[in-house]
Image (cartoon, rainbow, N blue to C red; front, side, top):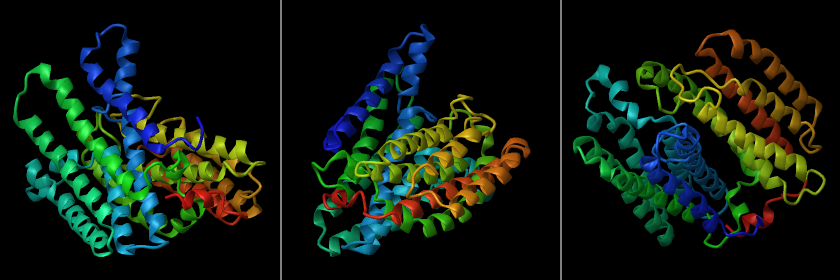
Length: 389
């Protein structure tokens, strides 16, 4: 597939496949089991699968490209607000945060889900209003309208979920309900991408520039330090509803490794000598962050355990990074060796929760090495891309 292919067509080809599988799941016979498992793996109605990972990754890309825009021209506060919304939506999609709200806030009396979502909905609403106003006041009327429509669509998804729980619809409505609900959310994802990427731009426009990953290091470090213990707490106190849900504390390592992988893919097209290694690094990083969410070796994760593949994936990614001349340096190599050597015992024998504190540190180390190496390694590979956004 050519890098010049328009991103909209590729987005809807992938998204359309997931929507079809969302409807087909209700018509799949129990046998053969492989067929049913495959459709389940591609259905947007379930967590910890490829479809949900895709949607969460798209939200994260919105956040990254909005942050990238904030360093250029335009209403900086509006771009920061959109970045925060994109990151929050990615977290909620992949970690099932709002679904856990009634159990999470039950100790303070918010055990009704309509009230329990308020601690999340109110800050999100404030950020959304500030972002919308920022675009409108800056004369970015198209982006303001797209954001307004997106907020209505995502709000309608919440309303549809409430209707689903309150009304006992006949089983025959399930495929249509699923497609309408998930389709509304994906149209919202598409409109958010329309805000940060110009219509008709090539698919590589969805990749943040390597120097954006470098600028993200300080905010990413702060977010990781603050969010990791909070997400571990949320996952632990709501563990009784874990089956079939995303793992809250998997989001930080997911996001950090995804950013490193996207930066590597962005740097690959115009780096002739390094193209193959950078592409492999990017693809394997995306696979690693997918496995962080899907936990491929366990399937439905009821014990908050990390995938065994992750014990090997980050060292492999670190080794690949050291094969890239722009990234390779003695300090970077020493940093990765120290992180992986000291982290391995905690990842393998420190119980269920300690690995979730170690994994973000290792993932941030990988991002730091990749981002600093690519950003300081000469000409910016994505400069031509940036002009089309």
